[in-house]
Structure formats: structure tokens, C-alpha cells
Image 1: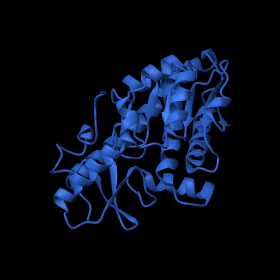
Image 2: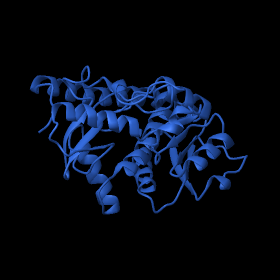
Image 3: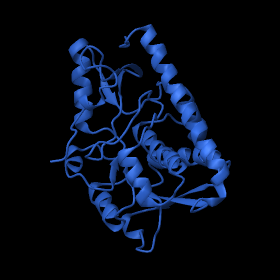
Image 4: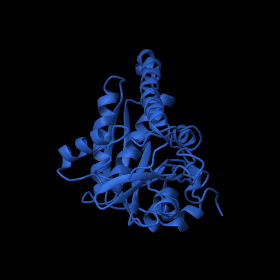
Length: 284
């Protein structure tokens, strides 16, 4: 059973999501073509701190492939450099952003070593680190509180269900999710999971921001990401960051091995776009 706002609402939402993506691409394309050679850097380096054996690395690599398909028309090359730990980051490093798949201590160390650089958390879902509100930390995965609220909303209408709340699932089909899953599985021979989606999303939202701002300056990118981001992420919503650095996003409801709905749950929350009904919004 899938929660729906009605056939007309679903069609309208799909059309809006597709139209927004197409419009954003055309706008970025038009802005970049005359200025491609005037941009402040041709190569944009993204650091990945974590183990290459994690699916987050594979997701980030998938995002890099797609970013470079876009970038080759715009005079940009995106580079993903893997480091095993935060201690490998040199003070003279000048990445545009860092993607971290590690524990809380590693995340804090990276953020402290490179203040003013966007640092994407793609592996931790704990609530405590979000309450601390690190200024340059951006949490891509939904928090535990967001997933609890998603399940609570779902069970209000479906008390008999035995469901899980996930950021992503390999059975996701709407909003071009099936195409994303197919691309990832073709590249890595396995289903896309939450960490893989988060790694992909981090690199993609960073590359989209480079295009929109026509800059690879970390400070400009961080400001845009925190205040002006509208990222679809194949979830059919304009996702953006809260004050606590958490990405607002729909949560997939999965029973067995199939997506059966999503939260916010229509009829419980104030509509599918009521993303702040999931989890904590403010800092402590």
C-alpha cells in the first residue's frame, strides 16, 4: 500500500520535480557556457575520508562519474581523493569539500582541521552530533529522530505494518530512482543502500553547487549549501539544510524488500512537503 495525495497530485508533483531539474540544468548551462574559462578553477578536488570498502565510497564514486559528465561541457573536472583518516589531511590542503564516512571523532577532526570547508557526513545517523551544530558539517543521512518520526507517522495510518524507515532503497522507482539504482548496480554489481545514496548525493549536490555559484571557493560553496540549496536527490522534493546542518528529506518506508510509502505521511503531517515534521530542526 502506498500513501498518495491522489493521482492528480502525484502527476503534478512529478511534473514539478522533472521541470525543476530541467530548468535548473538549462539555467546553469546558459550561465556557464560564456563563463566557463573565466571560472576560478578548472579542477575541483573533493576529499573522501573513509574506507574504500564502504558503500559510501562507491556512491561518491558514482556521483563523481555523473559530475564529470556534466563538468566536461562546462570546463570543470571533479576529482575525488580518498584518505584513510582525518590525520592524513594536511593544513595546506585546499579541497572544495570533504565527504566523511567515519565515526564522530573523525568527523569533528576533519571539520576542525578545515574550517570553512563543507564537510558532508554520509555515515552517522546519531542525534547527538546534530544537536552540537558544527558550522561546516552537513548531515546527508537522515537522523535517528527523523526515522523514528517517519515510522510514527506511518504507523498512525498503518498500525499493523512491520516497516523500516530508510534514506534509500534499491526498489525505489519514483522520481528517476529506478535509473539511479540501475546506474549504481551496473557500476558496482550490488544494490544501492543508505550510505551509497548519501555518498552519491554529497558529491552531486556539491557539483551542482559549483555549477550554480560558478565557483569552487569552499566558503562560497558552504554558504550556498547552507542557505540556498534546492536538491532533488531523486526523491521528488526540494531538499535543503536546517540550521543544525541536517538535510531535510523525505524518508522511504520499506516493508520486506519493497518501498510501500514515504514520510512525511499525507493525512498525518501537513502534506508530503512538510519535511520539518521529521526530526529535530534547531540546535541546542
